[in-house]
Image (cartoon, rainbow, N blue to C red; front, side, top):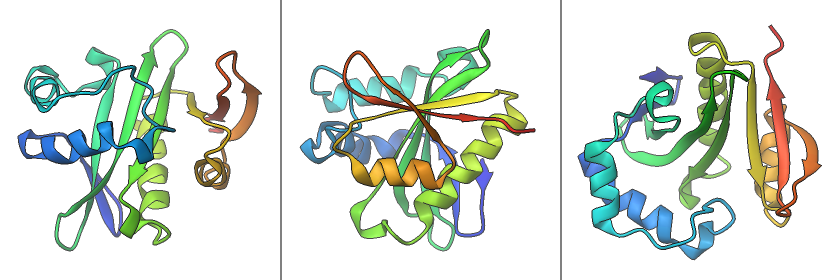
Length: 164
């Protein structure tokens, strides 16, 4: 578990399937979900049960963002495309609308970045962002990610390198 002053991040558990189903299939999140088909509840339940929830083994890891005071799940941070040779991974974040602009997302991303660099020993974190998703662009820039390029598929590539 990753802990900050106001939130903690934990791996996915069985009771999270409803929220994940909503996030994965909500058209409002089309700028952050890049899968080609809708996921069913069974797809999500199977993934929760069969996934080892270990970035190094699965090349992906979803962490649920929970408030410390009541353990309510308010979002998630996804790590994906783990590359051991390049010491890199991708990152994405969703915070429920009613909890945005309260500092929870910024705390979650910063503690996750620290975890990636210090505990996992990675050197680079990438984020692909849709050009119209200006909120995410500002968020990642505030988190010290640098714009690298517009990709062949039209998304913006942002990168954060470990400065240590």
